[in-house]
Image (cartoon, rainbow, N blue to C red):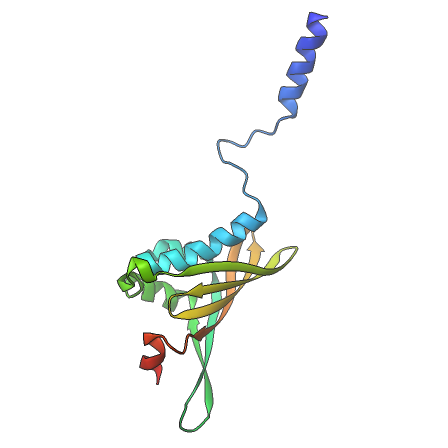
Length: 155
């Protein structure tokens, strides 16, 4: 009786996965954490954190329409440009009380996700993909909030 109880305990322990000290992170949490690395990297001026969230071939784009002519243009930013901009610390100038970072996962299908991120002066739509086992931002389409200081600078 003791040996069968002992054998049962040993088998139960062997069935529990060992994770080398790292807690398992589900995909929903990983998608959210990627978006947090992106926006918190911006707000703290942490280029390494921003870079960790991005695929190296990221395309970040915005449509800007000239209010006088009604003509639109597409501005683009690469991952390298974005990381360099973060390292200048411009985002770190945002006061803590204005550091908005509302994250909503709008859709997920297997290894891709669309995430809405509402920040202090803009709204980003992030396209994330699971790349080599990690969630990375592949594309960003963004829009400046009309009432923001950034909108005034772009006019």
